[in-house]
Amino acid sequence: MPAYTFAQTDTTTIRKWYAPDGLTVQFAGNIGMFAAGANYSFSKDKINAELLYGYVPSFDAEESLHLLTLKGIYKPFKKVELGNDFKLTPLRTNLALTYHFRSQFSTSWDNAYPENYYWWISSLRLTGGLGSEISHPLPKNGLFKDITLYGEVGTYDLILTSALKDKTLTGWDIISFSVGLKAGF
Image 1: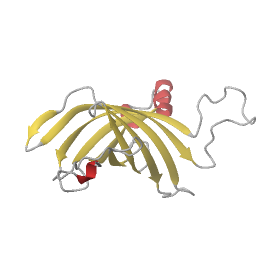
Image 2 (image 1 turned 180 degrees about the horizontal axis):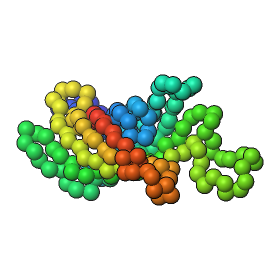
Image 3 (image 1 turned 30 degrees about the horizontal axis):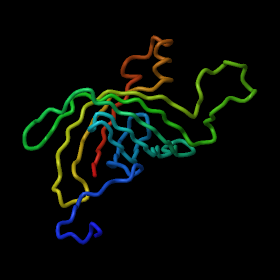
């Protein structure tokens, strides 16, 4: 007898492996002025992976920037209950790889430069950061089960190595701040 003929129905659905566990939007943080994309949760939300599309408006530049970021997030500590169903994650660390879509950025250097003149690839940036988050469950009858607000302080490979060589750069020159919102399914 098929399962759907029983009087009690199971309302839980098994999500396909490729379906995200949430959606993330972020402002700033070296992955675009605005970024949005899918969030995948693993190990009881201790590890997250995000695939984000970032956008930087042109402002005074000739073109706007479009970026694609693969971001890994690790939360080493348990969530702390704050009351009224709020939970604090005291530390979240992240490491990300961002690709810039634009003709001026390349994944290789042409013969115009001597070998090893540039050590970096202009279209790829490695970013990292530290932050914390606060989450709150949402009513069970909606599309999302919880909402999380997070903040991060971060930097990226090129500016960090520049700071090691150029002593005139300060900590404020190499760090960035970001704020984001994640809605979990």
